[in-house]
Structure formats: structure tokens, C-alpha cells
Length: 214
Image (cartoon, rainbow, N blue to C red; front, top):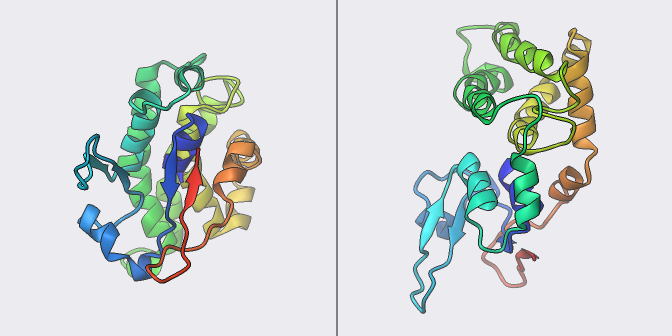
């Protein structure tokens, strides 16, 4: 999701194929042996039919969209990288903590039946230090790093959304008002609503057409 947020915001021209993970197309697995989404396949710059590059980490796709995408809107990309209340180093550290620490706890919290060594409440408690860090950061501004929804917000919001959806009543009752408000506002942005628009799942049968974003 965060990869698509960046691609849309920065004006990338791309073809979207929605993957059902229980039925992964062979073409996707040929492009990326990881078998996870997202996968960005960049075309070759010649008549060669092989891709010139495959990016299969969402944060790397975000970075490509903002800094390497030849079709990007330079002003939009630069605005997303601007900061007011946090340095770029602090933002990168926050994203790294999300990707390396919080995401692991989130997966165990979502699928606690696969991790019976601890009850679900244990994983909720394990997530709280990171959520409290975000709460403290958001006491300085409406969004992470400033007054507008930018790169750091897009990089983290999908994960906080997933966490909040496991047990919404529990998330909504913890004393994290700034974070809860940030999440609600982020989910209402035009960019997020565009990303959430349903598209037909990718299949190899007749009649399938990928969604093209220009």
C-alpha cells in the first residue's frame, strides 16, 4: 500500500496488477522469487523483453518513486521529502524501527494463533513503546515531521492501520489521542482513498485488463 501511495503522489506511470496471494501468478514469481507484494518491474530501455530492474521491497519502491522515477513530479516529490519538526535522519530511523521492529510484532499480533508461545495481549504490549514514540512525535505537529501528510506518514500509516484493525475497540481506548487522530486523518486523504479503490484481481484468463495509472 505504501508503495502505491508514493507512486500515485509522485506521478509515476504504472500498470497495477492486484495479486491474490493464495493464487500467485507465475509471471509474478518469475519476476521475484520472494513471492511477496509489492513487486515493481521496470521495463528495459530497448527491444529486450527482459525487465531492466525488479524492486520487491515497498520502502525501496517509495524511494524510487521519489528520486529515480523519470516521470515523477519534481515538486510533489520534493514536498514529500521536506521536514519541519524532524530531521531526515530521524525520519529514516523511525521508518527503520517500523520495518525491523514494529512489523514483526504486528505480524505476531495479527496472527497470534500462529505464535501460541504468547497470548495476543502480549504482542499488543510489545507494540506499545513504538506507538508511544509516534504519539510523542505527533505532539509536535499534526503529521510526522510537519504540518502536512508526507513521506514518513505514508511509510508508516498502512502498518498502524493494520494494527488498529485487529481489535479496533482496544486500539481506540488506549491513551494515544494524537496517533488515533493522525490515523483517522490519513485514512481520509484523497491519496489514500484513491489507493484503496478496489480493482479486479490479476488472472491470466481472457478479459483481464490491468489498471493503468498515468
